[in-house]
Length: 149
Image 1 (cartoon, helix red, strand yellow):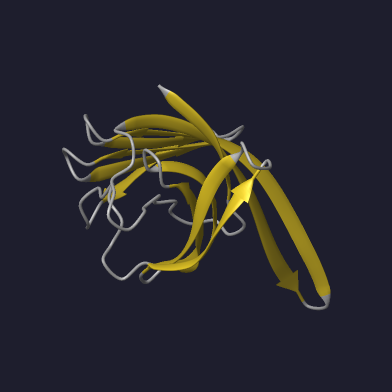
Image 2: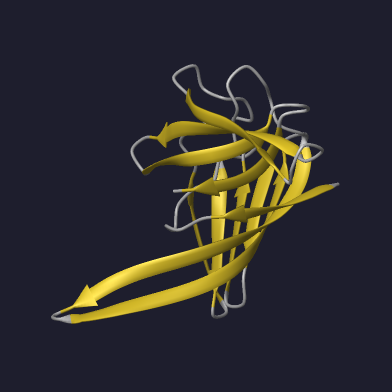
């Protein structure tokens, strides 16, 4: 199974895409989350780290952190949230995509790590109605590198 590091700055769905290609069918990542809230004049920041597992063959996605699990079963179109010993479920409304939508646009491409490093393409993408962000992909093999929402 393929592993990579994803950096996410807003709690949301992390769908890795690259225009013209489809990502590997099974892989895992580490997701860093940061949520900012305001109560009156006080700002609060909460950070968390989750393990994300993507299985496009079996149509399942899972996120697991210290006190939360989210499992999405796209065969049954149902998702489960398990937090602090309580389980909640809900319906999934859209199919599980693993290819870049046609409206993705390239912001820039660059080399990381010098002349023998890795080539990355940065894409601007939107996941309506939840979020808008950028995604870094290695175009050789359509390998996700990082995402910011």
